[in-house]
Length: 483
Image 1 (tube, rainbow, N blue to C red):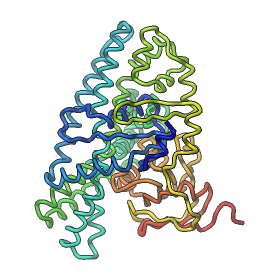
Image 2 (image 1 turned 180 degrees about the horizontal axis):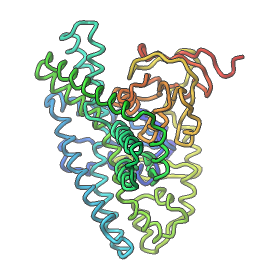
Image 3 (image 1 turned 90 degrees about the vertical axis):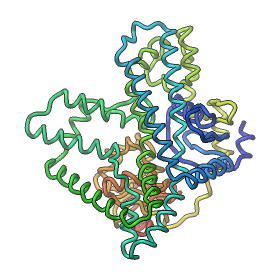
Image 4 (image 1 turned 180 degrees about the vertical axis):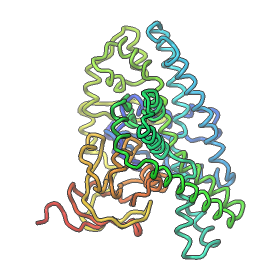
């Protein structure tokens, strides 16, 4: 297989660890047309997840992106009509998960019943995963069309401010909703009115934010209580957020009045795409929380050594293991050292062992990095910051973050939010205007430069840098090896 992978011209998407179970579902879903309610050929072949590096055949990506742009150019409401299907399907999944996991006595189900419910849940996720790519096709197209319209309709000195408003979602994201919930709980705590029921409700609503790697981990009581206790002067913070939101909505509505009707629709589409970009993956993380009790019961039935091992199996392997009541622990342990998933449009297969080592050496998917003192990217949220850098490539690095450091990462995900609140600026390798880093930086008003491609390779922990998020540049002022 390595020889096959070497011949493909790969488009690198991002580096992000997800466990085999959900990685398998995602890339299997995107390489087939499981969702028959979508009248659009979204499927594409040749997806490769090489030990957390996700890539796709460049020709396939371009082919489907061209189809998507053609669809939205002919029907400006195409994206919103498609996301509406996703929202309805998610409601169906939530209802299914709650009914079969939270409301049932799962211990009373036999193995065949567990298998049937699990298969149905996976089928629903295969349909939902069809929406993973939609926002990524449109950001450049929509931004270009809207920028051209804004340049025509507004004075030159207002263009950047108007574009900033249009590229910030009017729908609050999960991080902003969680922040408001924490602040309200802090107010209740100051009033000595916070209850255990409040904490439980908070975890039910936001505990999934810790599950971005799809490992079955969710926030617990102690973590939530500690975060609440760290909030100083919550009344002032809540008023600031509310005032800022009212000001934002006022500007958004005022600016839209100066646009023609077609551009207004495109702005609405961009707003929807920005919100949906995070929403579509977050629902998978969150819905897994509803299935937690169900997954744990299956793990017991197939005699796993550790509940987290459940997520290192494919759906088919889990279903098959329920018959003899035994999973292959050797396969699980091997995948923990690295795995590959390849979806060619016909089959989706998972590999581990020596082939992972070989493929990492021989499969080329990123350009060589040239040494430089100035990195160039794009501004997601403006500002100028000088501070030390900390490289965060996974949650295992979270303990390196200190207040005021500059966060440098391949990309960010919802579980990064607690450390993002500590940083003075964000710099990422990946990202467009719809990326998580871009969205969260605008929500939290943190200077951010996205799309540098090589920041995690060039910068080192402790480097003193200047992040000029007004220009989209990162300048090394003093490297860690300099005296």
